[in-house]
Length: 200
Image (cartoon, rainbow, N blue to C red; front, side, top):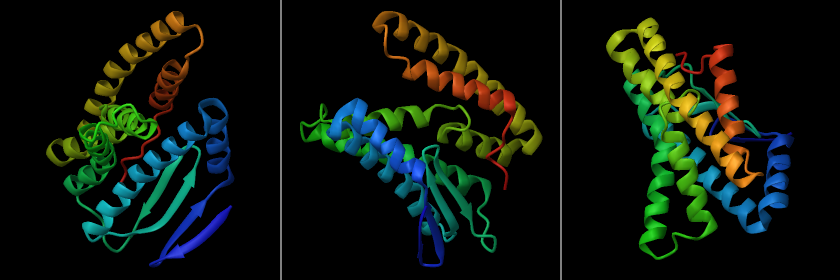
């Protein structure tokens, strides 16, 4: 594990992060792996930038193959609406990056496609994706934590099952592309286990 401290924030980069990069390079080539890493770095930088911009810098950031785990500062907790903005900052920046590259005529570049994929995926109102967390924060601000959790779980389930069906159809059509189906199964497992990433 590689560790550094930047502005009182402890940043941990785990070995699995490098393993994921190697996996992407093997199966998508160097361009695909680098593009995915660049889009993911832009995505996470947007989350962190939003937190700093809202006056609540994180205390700890852990990067692994499962994503970026951020521990917000205990002295400056963010209200729910601000938390939703932090959640949407990642996919928002990815989509803006794709639009900017498309305007320049580079919509087919691997980096543009990686940004589009991350932006669309994390815009879905499914937990633990950013869109799902943003929805939960907004609902919690209006209806309270318990009601917000119920609505968010139902919304996530209603979105995951069509996503799983689409992933199955993609697998049947291509005979090898199982990534969407695997993602859908992971999201289903998350919903069943009931892990809560929207705790304040």
